[in-house]
Image (cartoon, rainbow, N blue to C red; front, side, top):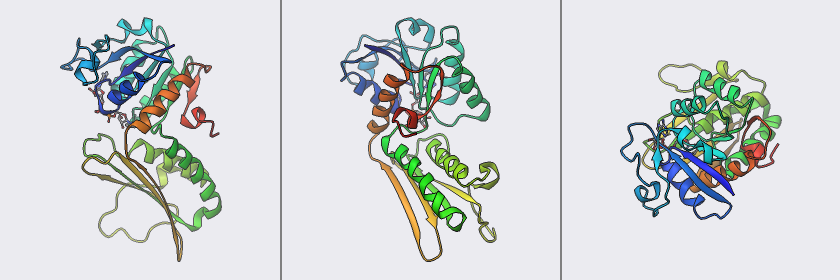
Length: 267
Ligand code: NAD
C-alpha cells in the first residue's frame, strides 16, 4: 500500500487526484497540504471537496504528516513546492511535481533535491502529450530548418503562468532536436512592424479563455503545405491518472530527476 500526500489538495488538480486515489485499493491518502491562510485548514479534505469524509485533515505543515507517507504528489504553486521541499529535506521523500511556472533558480533547487531522492518533474502528465513530445523529435529530424515552427497553447482564464509548462517543454524538445538555443530563438509575442520571420524562430503563442482544460498545437509551416499536430485535454483526470502512475513508479526508483517519458517507458 502506497501512502500519499497531496499538496495543493483543494485545487482543481489536487481534488481530482484525491478523488481518483480514493477509488484505488493499492494507494492510501496519508495527508493533504494547503497554503497557510487557507480557509479549510483543519477540516476533512473529503468533506470540503464534496467527496465524503476521508479522516484526513488539511494541514500547512508537511512535517506533521511526512512520517506516515511514502510519496508527495504536488500540484500547487512554484513557491509552495520549493517551500515544502526545503522543509522536508531532513527526511527526503520521493516526489511527483506537476506544478508549472518555476524560475531557473527554483528549477535548480529541484535538481539539487533530486540528487538524493527520486523525483518525477513533468509539466504534463497525460499519455497523449508525452507521446506527442516523442513524435515532435521524429518530425523535425526530417523537416529540419525548411519548416517554420510555431506552438499555440490555450488554457482556462484562471491559469497563472504563461506560456504553459507543456508549451515550454515542447519548445525545449524542438530546440534541442533542431540544434537551436531556445533563449535566442523563442518568440513569445508579435505586434507592430516586426519585419520578416527569421528562419530559426520558435514561436510560442498563448491563449487564455473560459474553461479550456488544455490545448496545444505544434504547427510546421513549409512552402505549399503545413503540418499541424494538436492535443486537446477534455478532462483533468488525464493528468491526475498520470500523476498516480508516476507516484507508483517513482517510489521504486533510485535518486534522480525523471520525467513522464521515463514513467511511461518512452525513452
Ligand atoms: P489551483 O489554483 O486550482 O490549485 C492550486 C492549489 O495549491 C490551491 O488550492 C492553492 O490554495 C494551493 N496552494 C497554494 N499555496 C500552497 C502551499 N504553500 N502549500 C500547499 N498548497 C498550496 O491550480 P491547478 O489548476 O490545480 O494547477 C496547479 C498547478 O498544476 C499549476 O502550476 C498548473 O499549471 C499545474 N498543472 C500541471 C499539470 C500536469 O499535468 N503536470 C496539469 C494541470 C495543471
